[in-house]
Image 1: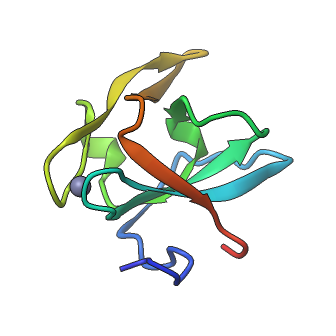
Image 2 (image 1 turned 180 degrees about the vertical axis):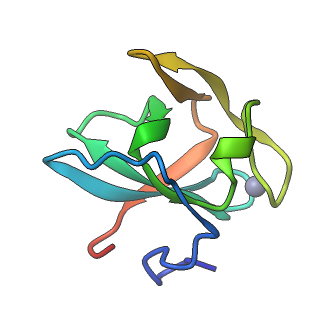
Amino acid sequence: MGIGGGGDDMKYKNPGYRKVRNAFPLEVSCGYCKMPILIYAKEGRGNLLKLQVPRVIASEINLAQHPGHLVCPSCGKVLARRGMYNGNAAYWVIRGKVNSKRLEHY
Ligand SMILES: [Zn+2]
């Protein structure tokens, strides 16, 4: 798994990822079973409220074929709800259901 390894081993790269300036890589993991779910390019210091799909760098879930809510592939819990933000697909994090940590290198 990606724990400590910088998440290089995520199954899927997001072909729709759009690089943004001043973002840093964040490993987002399941709040229940701790499985790393995706690597996200986070802007700013605020809490992680939403996951905009174009900012997802890589993930354990094939988001392109995953029209529903964000479900942990390991324990099956719903972590975030599918929606929209600024015209793009997004997942709205259910409060307290994911953990995140900043990666030094990705
Ligand atoms: Zn889980």
